[in-house]
Length: 452
Image (cartoon, rainbow, N blue to C red; front, side, top):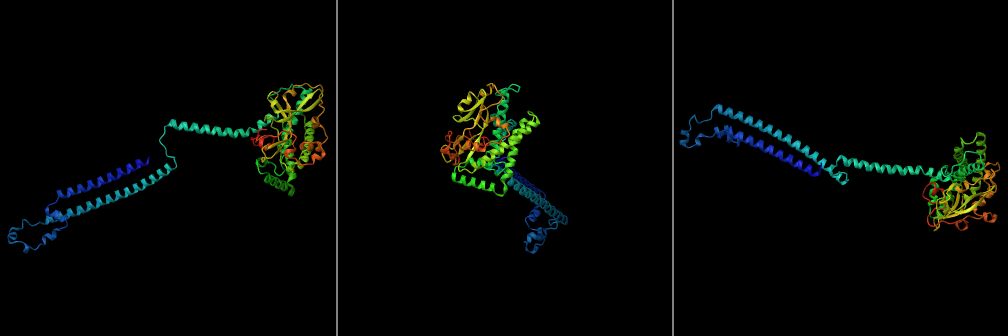
């Protein structure tokens, strides 16, 4: 009901009430006129019958005294009838007044109700909620729009949930190459690459992180990767590292990280290997992760902020690719542009870069990372043992040489240069232009905002 309709209804109620009151008053007046004599009319005007009878007859002229006979004087019956009429008139007027009072009370209540309705309508109009009446078809259309919006929101949330799946596709693209069901040299190589790819992903997620303060530090890594003030970021990193070093907080976190990383690596192999081999592999991987964590701890204290990534999507970036020839495998530097024709099946070691958003080139490569391409998966191996690189060491019992890993992270095998701080100018890789991400798990894998 609109405000105009409410006003019209109020006007009609007031007009109808006034008509009823006027009609009742007129009927009463007609009744009084038709049932009274001249003396009765005088009585209604306020002159009582007793006052008329008490008029001094001596004041009348002589002719009037003679003319006034007993037949012209009011009789007793006439006086009784007049009293009865007066009583009836008073009763009727009293009833009429009561009815008018009741109607006035109803009108007052109705006006109060209309006032509340009017205020409610005004409030609705201010909120732009009150609209034109719509048909059922319009309402169904609105429901369709709401359903569409809801579907889009659900899809956007699902995209976040599917982020891990997209990353796993980058780690291992099982549909890109079908291997034969055998224990040939190429099949053994594929299994080795698969283990390395899962290890690389676990290193990025749990081991090669800015600090060991929290068990899950995705949000913290994101904040550090987005800070543009280098001085404030250095102070923040120093504060986090000092907190982690104190009160024995770091060691439980390191144990949790290693255990979680092992579970993520071994889960795909539960039905693939026998139990004794799985136990041996788990023990060797535990040594590997602990060795990498020990080598990475000094890197956390570098002046430069280092991050890692296992995403190989951005064009114009340098990567190391495993190339097999005969019984040997070599690391060959390739540009990521070749991945369009020779796609990456797995990233077997993450890219390491320095993040400094105060510079135009925010990301500077320190170590380019290692990939395994589709073309190398089709090369037949004459020998099951691959020599020339450290790949088979994953099944060895010797610990990982931490000095060699630290030298790789520092970008130089030279001992003097290895002791220096890593900065953007010391990097041996390519630098990203603008805001394109060349590394950093929180900017690529965890956040999905990077492009490396």
